[in-house]
Each structure stands twice: as C-alpha cells, then as structure tokens.
Image 1 (cartoon, one colour):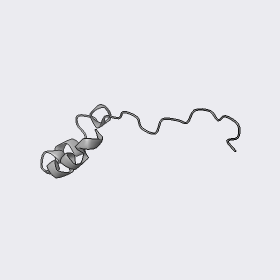
Image 2: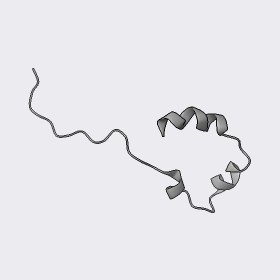
Image 3: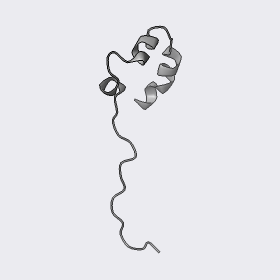
Image 4: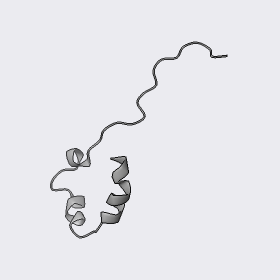
Length: 48
C-alpha cells in the first residue's frame, strides 16, 4: 500500500565551495602549501 502522498524530500546533494567559505587569511590555506593532497584530490575528482 502506497499511503498518502508525501511532500518532496529535501535535496540530498547541494553545491558547496570551500573557496567561498574559507577566508584568505585562514590557517588552513597556509598549511595547504606544504601538504600534498594530489592523491586525495584525484580520488575525489569523480564526485565534483
């Protein structure tokens, strides 16, 4: 039995950009210069 019609479900995915949310002078930006995350970025590129 299907039951009553329910309201639309909220979106499961949404667009989010760290560049828009992390200030230019944030500590993570200076750390990013010294940490190589190329492998992780490559692995996650399919999800972008």
